Length: 527
Image 1: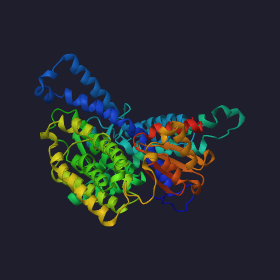
Image 2: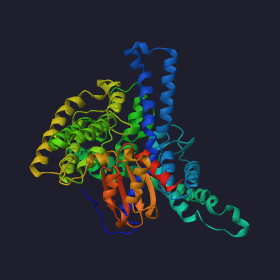
Image 3: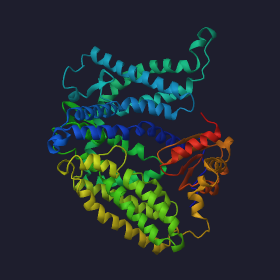
Image 4: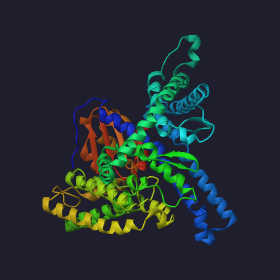
């Protein structure tokens, strides 16, 4: 396993893309909890569910479910502000609170400006808002810019914050300098942004709808390509940028539900989840979501078993514990990085094959019209909430295990054959004498501080760390000098894999990464 690096400046494309992708994780992090509320509340308060399961027909219990559904729904109805704040806060290097406040003000001002222009031009719709591309956002009738509008506001806020958060004004205006100037300049800039959006967005809506038509016209092959590209972007932490437009904008399709235009596969699914008249969920779910369950719950479990059986007998005990925890994580939650990074660097060909299989899984889900939605990833929890509890008539969820079991053996036999044929150095097959148990238990040797010290030293020391953050499974770090990074020390700390390009470093640990991040920040004395 090695560090892939190349010479580049501190502002390399990879580093910028990594930070941009990381900024999406903040708003995304709230979606699983909101999805659970909406999924459980919506499913169990649905009249059809109550009819099927009479024991649910208890007044106070239905009230609880209704509250849960309402609490979850409000999150998905306000994704624009979540992304505006999340991107501004995620990208800002300092003074993140000001960036978040400024982004809220900017989004309000932008939508209010659009509303005023709709009134002035006499184009403010009185009814059927969906039919003319308008909707309600934060209590304001405006153009339906959705998540794109939030992203644009977040990026604008970040740029203005970076430029003006340390500005010094003349003494008589000194009170408004520095951080206080950022919300002011963002609010004024949002007026111009609102004017631009008013003129441009109707045309953008037409283009997006046209792109959606192109995607539809590619049929099953297009679905395969979607799944393949999505998986190939995973190691670079850029997969969020790729799939979010399909999940949250008109690129993933649009449907009129209860008289409201809903755009984006995930948003359509959750709107239909609360609509008792839904007979079968939106077909786009089968293209952009449902294939994940086949890979994450079955395919990669087969890959784990193949790596276990091809490991050296004397190392199987350690390898078995690592692979079992990774397999359970993938099966239950759909978080796959612990498995994928165990073979990505030592056998890239296996990863390409995995990406192709994943694309095929998406295509099969499309062919079989499997419409099991999800909040974050394709694990057992989401399958139960958004497949089993919704019924096979709406979701065709029974096809998932029917396809998944053969998929398990497809991964198992293909991985086992290739590992043995080409002698890939997967877990337990390494030539070196590194003791894997050391990597797995670094934090147990001398406490959490030992692991944090290893990571800091492996990154070249405190003075070499410029930015330090994490996503769901990996640390995301920007360093001054990548030559000071020690793969040996990072591996000793328990890292599953390391990816570097220029000064942007990603260190994969798995779901416990937030704990590791807190340990390191305590050592660094970061706020």
